Image (tube, rainbow, N blue to C red; front, side):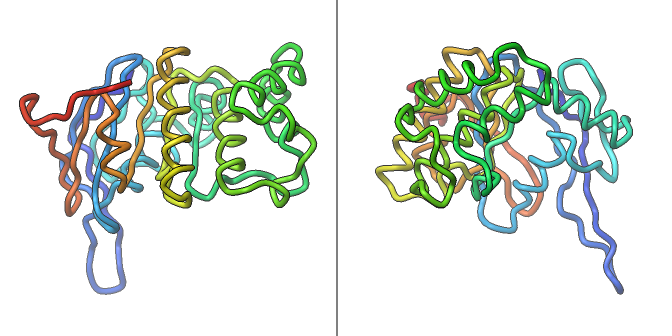
Length: 230
């Protein structure tokens, strides 16, 4: 599903060059759940953006579902993302003027899906928000907003979903509920799930874990990996 080879990302400063990622290589199979764990400033969010085609690397390649996205134009990457990729952000990224239902309907309408309203309603009911369809984001709690964001991300049935600190703005109990939801939908829909997180409990629920430090990615040995519970 995802193959990364010798990925490097550098940023030019006024007097120096900052290396954010260095020689990252990994392969992720279709349907897997993978966590990338690292401290703030370790390069994990930059890596996620490169994997999703939101940015291009300084060197190396990213192959997503058979397409070498690191060689595509910005428009070509955007088109691929609209068809194959879903996102869940720490800050939810909901449109404030739209209701929960309208937020989930939007990618379905843009993608030309049949019966977008019915599908969006079904997804919101699936994430426990069947009675909150007409509420705008400011009328929802943080956990409810993240549930809307998850429903929106899964609405277009993406082949792969990227999650950037999906529980980072939530309390422990709400974060656990959101974690349950992500892992359940990953399993039921067969969507490949790649997330970056500080939350070691959430990471432990994924089938594989990678650690990133100072832009270098490593995978603990199988013997050291926590048992996946998804």
